[in-house]
Structures are given as C-alpha cells and as structure tokens.
Image 1: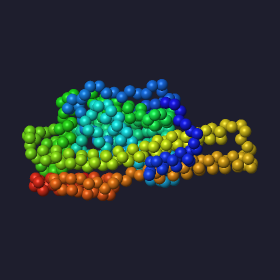
Image 2: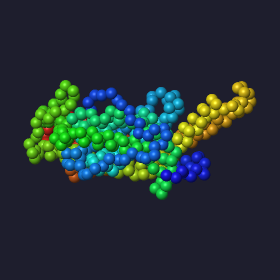
Image 3: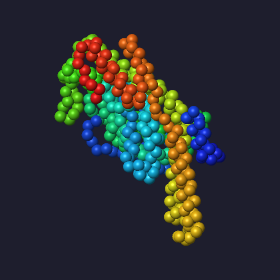
Image 4: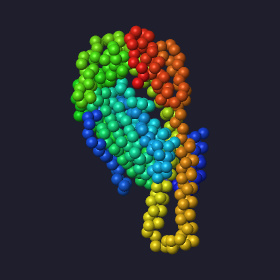
Length: 384
C-alpha cells in the first residue's frame, strides 16, 4: 500500500475520527510469531480448499477474549493499557478472526459468544497479552466438544508503517497475518481428524448441551475418561422427540447470539475508523518513545546534566509525551461496547432483554430452560 497522508496534525485527525465514529490434550504452550520486526515481502496465504463435508463443517464458538487488564492501575501507563480500549478489543478482535474463518469457507456457523459454551463443536478462547498499534499478542486455546485440545499457543504479530496506509478501501488490517496463521493452524488440526472422529465431535456437542440442560434425562449418554475427554456411551434413537426439543432449544439460544451479532456488526462498522486511527496513533506513539529513549541515551549534543538547557529539553520531551497520552485517552473514550436491548420471539412469546450482554445471555438461557421444562416435564439444571 502507499504511505498514508499525514499532512493533518494528530489531534485534528483524532477529533475528526471521533466525530465520525462516535456520532485440547495437555501440552506446553508454544509461541508463533507470524511477522518479524522487519516487514515481510509477502503476506501469509489463507488456506481454503474444496467445500467441507457435513462432518468437517464444524460449528465454531469464538469466546470473547479476556482483556487481561491488570488490577493494579499504576501499571497501566507503563504497559500502554487503556481499559476502555482493551474491553472493546475483547469483543472486537474475535470478530476479525470470525471474518477470516468465514473467508476460508472451511467451517460451519462461526459465532462470537460472550462466555464459554458446551453446546458447540469447536471452542476458541483467547487472552490478550499485548495490544498496541505496533504489536498484537494473544494466547489462544482451542478445543473441541470431546475435550480434545487443538491449540495452546501464543500468537504474536508486528505491524509495519505501510500496514496503516490508506487506499481506496481505507486502512487494511495491520495484524491480518495473525488471524490467517491462526485459521490455518485450526484447519491443519481438523485435517488430521477422520470423518468418524469429526462426526463424534458433532454428536458429543449436542449431547453435552442436552446433559447440561437436564442431567437426569441425558447424563448417561456420555462419560469422561481419566484424561477428561468425553466418550460416547450410547446414542439416542433416531428421531427421538426429546432430542429434537433439545436441538430446538439450542437453536433458540443461537438466535440470541445471531441477533446480538447484528448489533455488534453495526457497532464495529462505526468503530472501525476510530479503532484504525487508534492503532496508527498508538504505533506513532511507540515509535516516538523508542526514538526518545535512543536520543536520551546516545545524542552527543545533550546539554550538561542539571543545566537550564537540560531541564528545558527534559520538559519539552515530557510535555510532548503528555500531549500524546492525553490524546490517546480522549480516543479511548470514543469506544462503546454497550449492547442495545434485545427483542426476541420464542414459542409465540415476545421477550424483551436488557442490560449487559452477559446479563441478557444468562436471562435468555434461563427462559429457554423454563420453556423446555414446561413442555417436557423433565427437571432442568440452573444456568451455570
């Protein structure tokens, strides 16, 4: 891409952006660095291939990433953490991964969940380790419904100046290689599994959901071995009406996720310009800080320590750094990850949900469980 036009001052650009946008088996964790400090000549290629079979098209749950914000607020400045941005990234970045997985055409439904769920074929969880305009690092853990571990890795990617260049379609994704590498790794693991193994994953996911819904009715279909993996003991009869009800309840649960997903799609569409600018700004700040440390350590024309000129140089450096940080904090306030009230219909009833995403999801699960209990007469377990 061509280099971005930087004729406008950063504060003016930030204000403009704000106005526009705000109006697994156990193994040792390894690390994958997808892009070296020096820019690579060619980006990674997303692995695709032919259309997957029914068994291969596993449904994927991307659980909101842990923002990993230290409780000690005094460490935030040193680590470059702005809690408002980190909280938004915990939801936003899994959506970027979802887009990459969908582009590969190798999976079933890919959804972002607010919390872990047992009723899905493949779960991918993440913990943010570093997230700045110059570096993104996340610890990824992926496992299927049987408990088989797929990934336990740290993915790390570095941006280059040209990653933030502006073209006809606006800024690109500076850490695209990280998502491509992650998607390729998931696909590589799936390709090591046979059709019967993948079919078992799909059967276990529904039975685990049923067992969590009503342990008394479905608890004897599965058993865990010594390694903690789930094994099929028996299968329900084909066309079992109880399992059909379970499937329907799970589909209704997914309806909530899909409805909220539409809200977040609109939110992130508005958020994109601000977030792109945030990361570009963050990278500029990192570059400045590195240059400052080098100048402070190496420049020969440094004024004599304790002199007026030395104090003046230190003050000017400090003032510039504070201006940069203040602008960064103003930008952080532009993020808003509040979900709107959700209106859903189930069994002829219109249900209004409000509050945080976690609260709405828990309330919806409780409603579905009560409906299942009333229709079947089978005792249900409370929402975990």
